[in-house]
Length: 564
Image (cartoon, rainbow, N blue to C red; front, side, top):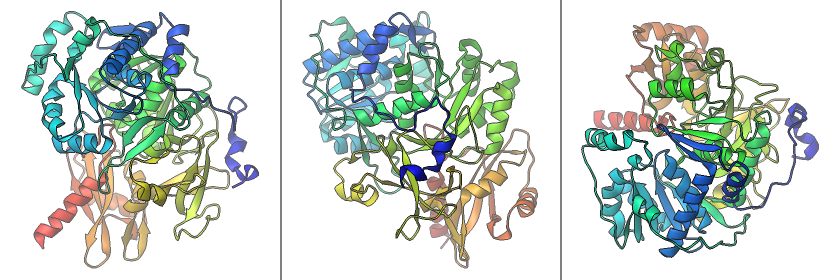
């Protein structure tokens, strides 16, 4: 696709450059820069505790020196297994300063999942919460781990919360962990009381040196480590700054609820805030009432989130008791954003909520609707600056015509280097000239706006018809009694597959299967109407709030197998 064929450029406001040179700098340079420019400005807020940019930078430098003193060399991998807390930000930038590669690790991982990721990445060190120490220590003998750094939520709590927290921890986790500081186990408080050599600056080739191994969800086989360079992450973060051109550096307050161990939270909250000198409100766990209280009291202006987060807030019975009017801009990611949710959230807050799109392999953002410009509800928007996109025919034989459905492919400075130690899997999705095949089915309209029809693997083929779950879900979300809905294809001996919907009703709703079936028959073609309905109290989700569609599919296959 040539420059003249990029239809989406016509929609760019004058404030956004369509093509620009992104800085070839190490990602951690931006923390140092913000600590210089915004030295005394608050960088973090965590359960009542605040830290300035200078304090965050100095602690990152101290930890980086400690890591180097304990043998960390350029290119060594360090696992960070933490929720959103000051330690997660400090650890991330410290590892990069020391020349290491961050391996973001979900704190909810089982021992088996943790062991796989540590072995696959070859991580030499792990930084984890005290309650996760037994898990890390258990898998250590079967991995390359040499050191475990242990911290606790109470390490950054203000008095008297710090005194009371051990009792909360014992009640919630049914344990109190007291590891000893020693040769291969290092306690956070001891680290920061010790004298360490100044961090030795490590030369970084931003375009080629890795900053991050971000593991994919593993919905098909084992998770793969996505190799993202310093340049990948810097470019995507700078694109974010450009896209949010009305936001003022040094003045914004960002709600940091998306987990930083997920690539979206890492870029859209942590890296973006550090680059812009924003204050981050760190929320380690999604509790609806706590989030509403935080918004009301701390007045965030930016709220990157996911559809299930916005849905959870909208359906809280006390939402109108809180003032949410500080929110000015939200970009929703990780899953399709229902139009009804977007409209309701904008009405409640007065801010702008737009849908964006991206993948772990693209650092993650490639498309978004304009916050202050033409928006097309139901669309993922237009490609970001320096980002190219096209539709490939489903046959894989060529580029599709405008309006035709095919697989979305993207190209740009945010596209990964490849999969860690998996050259064959890399070759399957990444062409020599930089085009990445996303695995998502969609189309582009005649104005350059892109639409996701569905994941390639989620498309349902029933009786010879192609049925896209998102299309059915959009209709379901229009029903006033539905809080959440997900559509899956389940095996059917006659049609090959058939459509099943899992529904979470709103509180006090008495919606029946018969009523929902009549609603669907009225609003969608007969071959798309679900044949099976199941009401649930909740749906399985990832840490970032994305509904685990594949888990539901596997459940149905297991039921069928047992029945057979």
